[in-house]
Picture 1 (cartoon, rainbow, N blue to C red):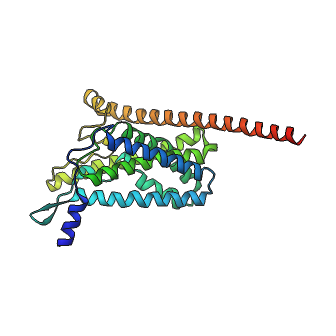
Picture 2 (picture 1 turned 90 degrees about the vertical axis):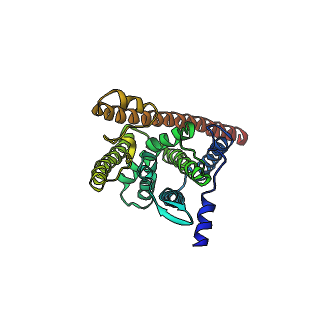
Length: 287
């Protein structure tokens, strides 16, 4: 027990104060995320599907291990030298940003090409948008526990890394059909979240549990706390809020998809021109 106590204390070491948005910790995380994304895209831009699957599986194992750590931290408290189970249900791992935990293994291991392509489209649109949103506007994701701050930055950083990497590797698949295959994954995940919200809420009522359980922040029983959407939730009926929620996320994902498509088209054009110039110069030298 002494060993477990010391281990728990070691993995729950705290900052004097939670890191600030665009403070040293946040900026360092942004720099590392950018460098790793550029490196992975450069090394694996023409990798085989098998290599992509291996990379995907490795990233999944890392974020899964960190998620297990997070769940243990949010599940146990140390009181008078004894471990007490007091789970924070709001941290249940089926939030929008938690979706890579379920999508990445499908990409890595499924034999169904259509399902794999849809999951890849989801990662390079909806998941990428979520990761970028947290990195640009951390809001209250930073807390005093150092390990959790690293976990959240690595997790959301992996969403950015894998989203951009998939876009670079599968740069020839951009199209309306591809985008909406990713949107279908988002809709399915949202409906699962809604089913969990309703089911768990009524289960908690029957057991007298007073906890917040709001997956994807679309529960009809708890306020949405997401930026902007929280204001929408307060001002219009729930049906209207859900409509705005789906339309808003699909629109944001479409913007991300369009920007990626435009950037990659520009890079391909520039690269093609350079290659053309190289061939022309080579012919002149030979002549």
